[in-house]
Length: 98
Image 1 (tube, rainbow, N blue to C red):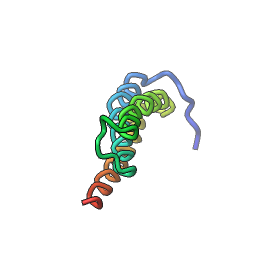
Image 2 (image 1 turned 90 degrees about the vertical axis):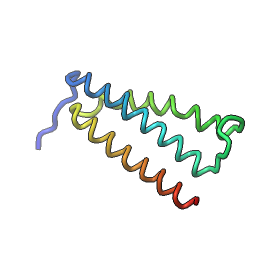
Image 3 (image 1 turned 30 degrees about the horizontal axis):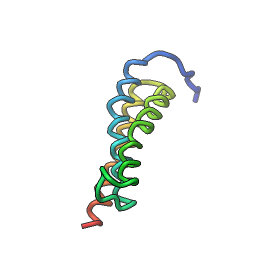
């Protein structure tokens, strides 16, 4: 199996995957933080503020690292799979809390 080199090809597909799916990934991670650490009121507590402000650096990191995928299709599939896992975990944590 030969390794494909990273290139600047497919930058539009990779960046759009990072923008769209990266935002959803960041929101899911923020939601998991809120559920796992018992943040009730998001606006007035320190944990709530941290959960809210975690979205921007996570989104920026995903957008930065999405260019390491070898193609835009792999970026979309990889980030969609990560989203499915995190949103599934968020749903599972939310169901156990009921």
